[in-house]
Length: 287
Image 1 (cartoon, rainbow, N blue to C red):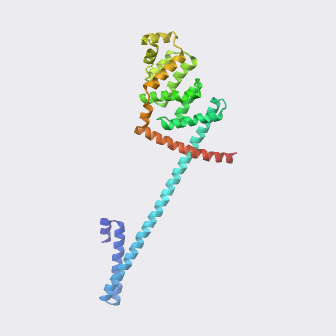
Image 2: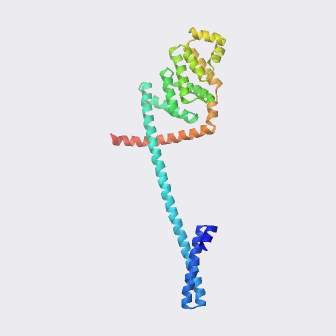
């Protein structure tokens, strides 16, 4: 009977039925031994009450064991997540500490300026579809090619919008920054730079033709003869990218993939903060 009840109404109902029916049977047997008839009835009633109490006790014990097991499992799960996050955070914090040292060199020993710039990059990373490490890599390229601190973020904004619109990878973004940076740094507009940009979907000839008031053929001849200064070409291409692809990053970051990436980036930033706090104390011990 208790098996059928468990099947129909669940294990707790089965436990109660088993205890009550068992109590009724035991109580009735004892009552019969004392006084058949009335004793049997009284014994059965007393057994039912005792069985109900026993059933409730068993149900409580089962819930208690389940609760303790659940708490234990959840604590182990939390502890494992915490340890994983801390390990990840330590790695990210160590990497970002090295990045600060590298930018300290690029900023000619201006640690405060380097940190302030990297804080801007971190904010830029949380607001755009691109990751902090990728933006740091592009920042190094632009800084190396002579862009000032105030110019780097606006330039990355233009390149980022183009990359978001054209579906480029972080590697493509770095190549775009490199080709434009080389033109700016050398003041030469070379075909290999132009071709590299064209291969990545940047309509360079359209931009230069419109800006200079020349046909594409004339622009090509001017490039071959070295008649277009690299600084001028770099600015034209960058400005047109910024205008033609404006808003592309904002649209991409609102997509499902973009939002998922940003959530991942924010989680990484929290882990990095935790890792940095840990490593600062740990360095004292290491010293």
